[in-house]
Image 1 (tube, rainbow, N blue to C red):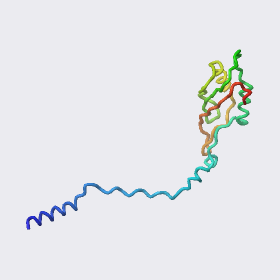
Image 2 (cartoon, rainbow, N blue to C red):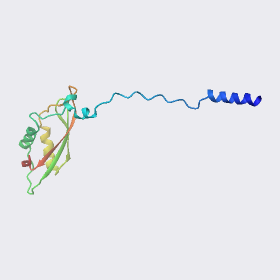
Image 3 (cartoon, helix red, strand yellow):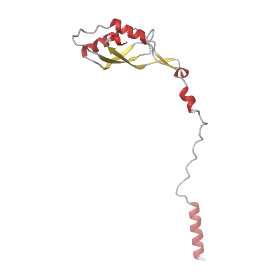
Image 4 (cartoon, rainbow, N blue to C red):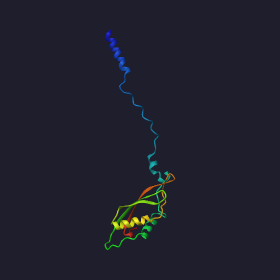
Length: 145
């Protein structure tokens, strides 16, 4: 009888004691979303518009071509200068840098002209102007664009 009582008590203690709790059930999954629909949605539908030079990118290149005065060189330099800058909410250019240049005097001429640039139409997101980092490749010589 003594062993029976001990066995019953041990059995009951194992039932009452749990070493771990059960994990909570996973949250419900959202309804299936058509992936193709998300990919094909244009950015303009989401209210995102990139910044734009007044008149478009062709006018920007015309502005550069008209305003820049490259230093005289006897050697034929060709390549591409890549300028980076931030277009502020008011359309002004800030943090103008040459990411990839050809020569210091040519790079300096590009920075000088970009500082003369008229205000751009700022980038828009959800109907509000936003700061946008922008990068422009410019081929040298200019007859390439």
